[in-house]
Image 1 (cartoon, rainbow, N blue to C red):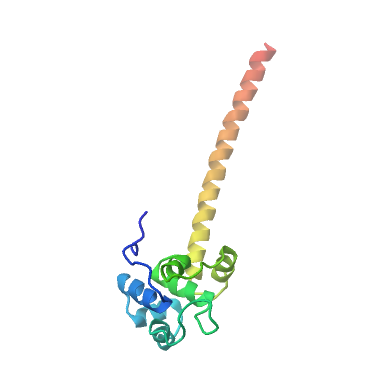
Image 2 (spheres, rainbow, N blue to C red):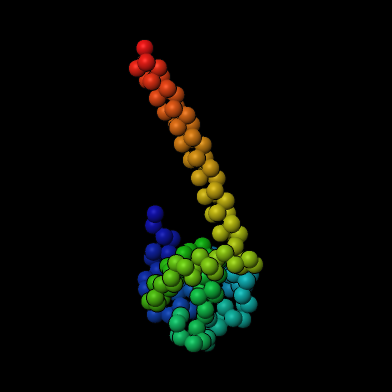
Length: 147
């Protein structure tokens, strides 16, 4: 599946990349700030690069903020960072940050978890049904063998 942001070439800063991805998602700064749970002022600072020149410097947006912003836009956090020419966030950081109660991305994480539980439950039932058929077939073969 091709990302809707595939046309956005690598950009040298998180702020510029974030602004372009936000616009591509059809969001203004106020909407993204609300969806991500950060202030519009801070979002403006990130986009204008008043905060820093990118993730991993002392004043850069934290991994948690990058994840919240990316989640609010609807992309994986590493897509934002890689397009901005930055190092990806380790999966263990992403998972621990996404599963923090009160995180705006929590609803998305909860929905993904619920869908996974539902899918695995359905798979367990299907496997259980197949095992029942297998047990019945084995029992039939054993009965045939005994005769």
